[in-house]
Length: 215
Picture 1 (cartoon, rainbow, N blue to C red):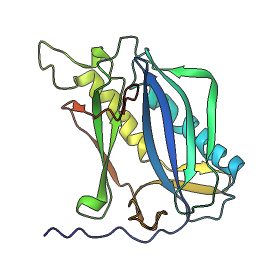
Picture 2: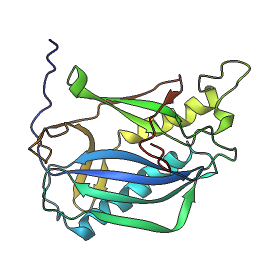
Picture 3: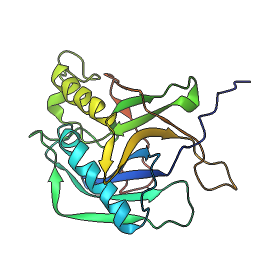
C-alpha cells in the first residue's frame, strides 16, 4: 500500500482562480490555487481583486500559449478554506484572444504543465492542462506528438510566471497545490507552495466531461 506524505496545514486563506475559455466552441476551465498568510477581506470585491491581479500578472503569458481562435472570456474566484464565502465571477467586456495567429489543435489535446512542491509523492504535485494549442507549436514532419522549440519557449515562459506571487493590496498570494477535501469535509485544510513547474513536451489528452465541454 502506497502512503503519500500529507501537505502542510494551510497558513491562511486559500482561493482558486478558474479561467473560462472557448476553444472550437468548447468550454475549457483552467484553474490555479493561491494562499496568503495575510488577513485580506475575502468578500466579493476582494475575490474580484484577486482575479484582476491574475489577469494583469499572468494573463499576457497565458494568452501567448493560445491560438488566436481561442478566447478567454472571464474568470471565477472562490475561497477554498471556507464553505460560506461567496464566489466572484467576471466576464470580460472584451474577450482576450490567444496571441498566436494559427488555428488550434483538437480540444481533446492539451499541453501538460506539472507543478511540484517541497513535499514528495502524489500529494505534492499537480497538473495544469493548457488547451488551445496553436498548430504552429507542432512540427508534424519532425514529431507530431511533441511541442516544438517555439512552443516550449512560450509554455516555459508561462511556467516561470506561474510561480510568481501576486500582490493584492497589502497581501502576497503565492501559488499552491491544495489537497482536495475528503467527504464529508468540504473545505481545504492543507496546501503547499509551488516550487517548480515543468513543461511536458509530449502532448497530452484530456477527457471530455460532457458534450460541449472541453477540459
